[in-house]
Image 1 (cartoon, helix red, strand yellow):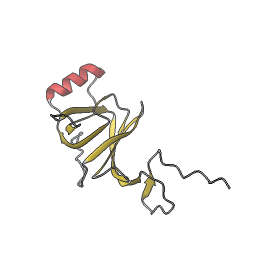
Image 2 (tube, rainbow, N blue to C red; image 1 turned 30 degrees about the vertical axis):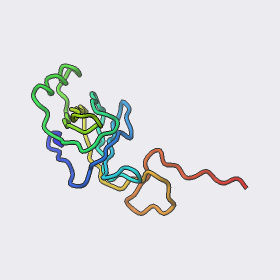
Image 3 (cartoon, rainbow, N blue to C red; image 1 turned 90 degrees about the vertical axis):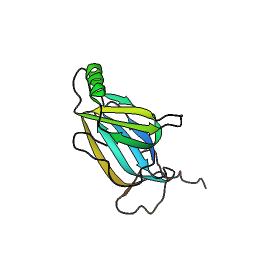
Length: 138
């Protein structure tokens, strides 16, 4: 991944999905298997253009082309501070070209659990949708 000096972190980042998206933030999560946890998040602050599937596999990050930069600049009215380009497997016959323009990007590496457990280790946290089980009625 290239976003004005950012490089993709080392690791096995095969499965990707969008775990949060609103006007303030786009959050992509990645792992070798997203079933139980993820270990990487790309957090795009103030996204101005997002063109990627909600779930994808094995992205190949690259520098945006001059044509992509010009097109995005026309669409949002100014040159983006961050423009990330990649191709990804979205289940079709061909890779899907993807672009994300934002004010900033942060790379977060930590274990984010996608299921409830009582014994969370230091340096781990729960995904936003994970809740403790409801108390049992007696």
